[in-house]
Image 1 (spheres, rainbow over the protein chains, first blue to last red):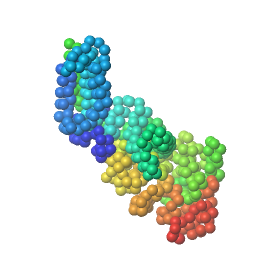
Image 2: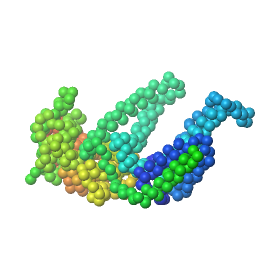
Image 3: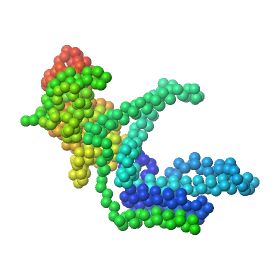
Image 4: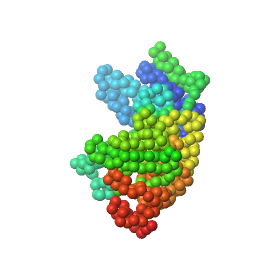
Amino acid sequence: MGAGHAHSLHHAGDSVVHRLPAHVKVVVAFVMVIAVVATPREAFWVFGAHLALLVAVWIAARLPVAAIAARSLIEAPFVVLAVLLPFFATGPRTEFLGLSLSVDGLLAGWNILVKGTLGVLISVTLGMTTPVRDLLAGLSRLRVPGLVTTIATLMVRYLEVIAAEARRMRLARVARGHDPRFLWQIGPTIRGVGTLFLRSYERGERVHLAMLARGYTGTMPLLGDVVTSRRTWTLALLPAAAAVVLATTGYV
Amino acid sequence: MTPSLEVSGLAFAYPDGHQALFGVDLRIERGERVALLGPNGAGKTTLVLHLNGVHRAGAGTVSVGGLEVSKPHLQEIRRRVGVVFQDPDDQLFMPTVGDDVAFGPANFGVIEPELSLRVKQALDAVGMGEHADRSPMHLSGGQRRRVALATVLACDPEILVLDEPSSNLDPVARRELAEVLLGLDRTMLMVTHDLPYALQLCPRSVVIDEGVVVADGPTRELLADPAFLAEHRLELPFGFSV
């Protein structure tokens, strides 16, 4: 869809996965994440199987691996934490390449790394195959409170408007010679943030007025009717069921 | 025949005590296009917000198509009064153009398949039929203004109220919007500072200043009286005369 390039997470396509209703995909992704988190950290091969399952979904959705990798970079800060753990955790230690590492820390680091990575990959897969507006409609269909989806809907729209406003304000500062290099020169920038907040607040009031003018009574109308057949649910829940089974075998 | 809009003796003071309107009378017949002129702070916007019941009259009444603006029929009033706000970014809050145009009619109880039809007709009427799936962020200023117009057209209003429709538009977008508006054949109240635009679009003008109507007549006659215009902080742009 046309809004694709606005939200770079989405990867337009017309695969089986793309065509599934958004609320079904949200449920599947949620179950898969829970299954991954519930898998015991020592069951190493199960995580490999989770990944294989995900790869199968990617093949079905025809998602390029490079695009998935690029979108997964968001995880990077957490990786740093996971890498530091083996060095600083306490408990019995082991030698590796001349480094003294904590066994507990290694396992804890691995646990964060593997579950975090799989979680991000599942979310990225959901985001790449579902446009944001469908995702929001899907959440409404799953009875997520209207206030939450309304806030999210407005956020998707106004993040760009506010970012553009912030860029214009920065340009206006720079055009008058503001060139902050040191912490004590940051004053005008901070005041700019304050102004931006006030402007956004006022815009919020105007938007609300415009919504009232078109009959808004507190709930967003649910646009587009989706009827989901039992067959669709069954098909879509297959990978979720597989992930749950895998997680369970990890305890055996 | 019932007029599209009838305002009589409308007075209003803001909660802080500032009195904005002192008894406004205004009658607009069905199919008329009327410009609402006046300097900043004259009470134009305050009047507009009375038409769809955002503000409640302190005294006097407002009726739209024979229905009085009051709490029990607020929803029907808001359907009948289509306000196009000055900044389209305030009006277009949904992720896509099509969703935004559907927002109004969906609130007023229009359901599929009628809803999709309304969206298509409204977007076609403003020449934006191709852009239903796009985000408002990726449209030009003129396109956004026309989509904002479509969002209220889809509600099939009794009267269109346009707040500064020509502001921030380049000359071509300004002319294109005028062509769209002239082709709509609807009752229209246009709040503006753009006097040539008022002359082009509205045969009749109402001038409001300090909360009262100070003139009501053919636009061309009003704009031909420099002394009157100067008295109310209005003036034609440099090089214009009528």
